[in-house]
Length: 159
Image 1 (cartoon, rainbow, N blue to C red):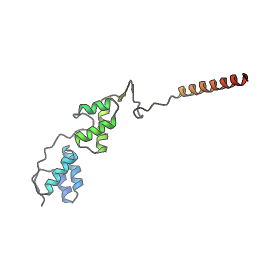
Image 2: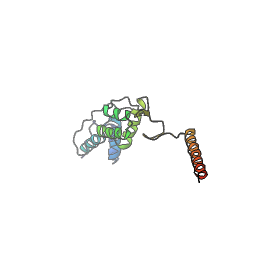
Image 3: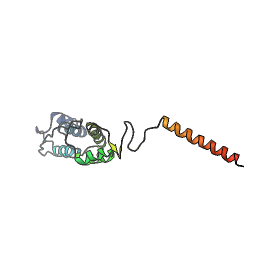
Image 4: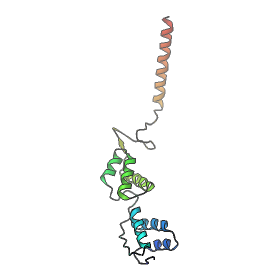
């Protein structure tokens, strides 16, 4: 038996009434900022007929202005986005995409690219990936080619 109390938002009730518990969980999370497990537990309890109380947390904006654990900021500052995503998933109960989006927003709100060692991550590159050298690469190729030709001519002239 379903409990039809006012504790859940109307759109969540509508989704449950339509037989869509997953949609109800999504709507509850969007309305309250709850984690996946918390929202699912509340929906399950509601469907069992238990009285549920939804303490709405302030929805956390995607612009990174919400509280962020220091470990997440530290991981991003070190260029370890995967660790930051893992920490967000553990701390907030987020899905993978949500945690990645949140990590991106936090990184953007930090105002600078994540640093790696003494350098920084250039936009569009993965941590550790080096930008292409452009003209510098051609100079190296030319020097190596010239050295090879000189060595060949020296060795040929010596025989």
